[in-house]
Length: 96
Image 1 (cartoon, rainbow, N blue to C red):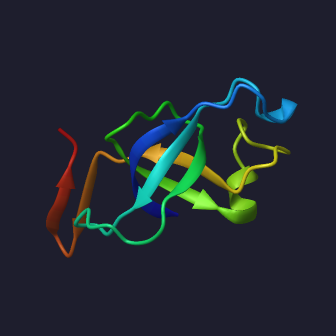
Image 2 (cartoon, one colour; image 1 turned 90 degrees about the vertical axis):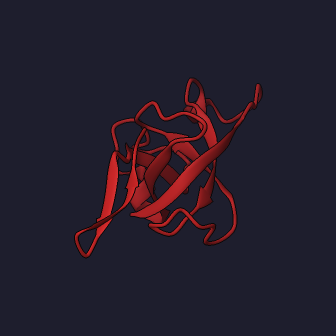
Image 3 (cartoon, rainbow, N blue to C red; image 1 turned 30 degrees about the horizontal axis):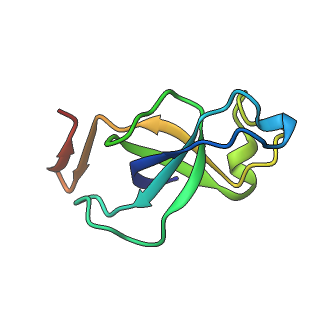
């Protein structure tokens, strides 16, 4: 799993039937200190995340391992909304 911040959403009125009813969000991968760390990507939201939240996502074949995404054509899935990140006992992020 990787850490990212949700920075936007994608509206697609015409898409593969397997994706119907699933929210698509734009993610910016980040470090535990919330510094940008890579290219943006689009992920299927399996947990009800929203813009501005820090999330955990997975990609590749792991992205199809949730009930929401099983057997669907996805390459990235939001699997969790982060409440806190601590590294070496130091809090790096706490959800407001």
